[in-house]
Image (cartoon, rainbow, N blue to C red; front, side, top):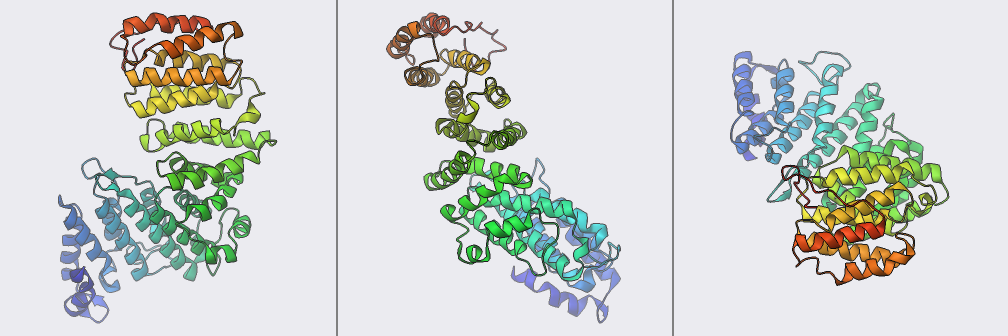
Length: 471
């Protein structure tokens, strides 16, 4: 960092032919050298040379802005080989931000000389793509460093544009920026939420006002100046009740739900408590608004579908769905037989755990299946069938836990099975030692349970097809 801070003075002393004009030969050699090291096989080399490019004075960037930005933007992209190099991507984003501030905004289109309409789109795109960086390594969510650098860059560049050429702000870009910020404000890392909240409020109350912010007037009511001035953006009890109110605006619904999913379905008790409470309270107020509840459930299944098999989201999604079902958040849909939400949710859960060997995810899916049993129609029969398959799963823990869950459902709801069969079902589920008996012993018992529940007995798969279940 000390070396990087010396670069402006070094360039001013040795790389000018006349004041404010670069020595083109030396400029070419230096920038080519720095760009070459952006492709280094050493992460620290990429970091240092990214920051060095970001520290170049304005006269050194003139005529070379195009290749410099292209090299840095490429350095922000995730590749298979350098997937865990989050710090290198973070520093490349920091460098882009510094360069844009150094070079300034121009209403022209010369991409070699200034930050303008010709390169603004690709710069914004690089920052917005970086908001999807959720890289994990032994240190945890190191992608958060990248996302935080991206949020800072989005704020600084937007502020820069607003001071000189606000007409360059595109509606689609502004909408995407706000959606990304809202999502980060609802996620699980306190530091990242706090950073996102500060950026969000700064853009919302920017002077002059940033154009094209979706539902700006509504946002100003939810996040009043008094609220923003006193709020602790890292405190889930302060922020989640506010951001859940944005669920009513279609532009933000998906982003809020995506952020809430990893918080409500997370493992940090304090965070789960406040995020889930805010979501429950919001959904309870929709008890009589079936169209709005249907819109929200449709968006919820879209989030699940988009992140199918992505454990970062899909596992918390299963846990959140279990909580929402157990809290009765979807009870208004019970009277609507075979509502599309329940059938689609069942299919998504089934797809998620097909060929799955993760006990945690399998148990979470069993919870959702049990929660869906309260809904009449075909979804109930489908869930019972899949729970019966779990009764003969190759993992003893899955068998035992599923039997316990099914037992609880049968004694809680009186319409899951024929009344005359309930006592026998309860006896079979409670008296069988599901985690110790062999599958050969358990399978006939499971088949009897299927018969008593009036669901088809599962047909064993061929060995090459049976990846996660043994029927």
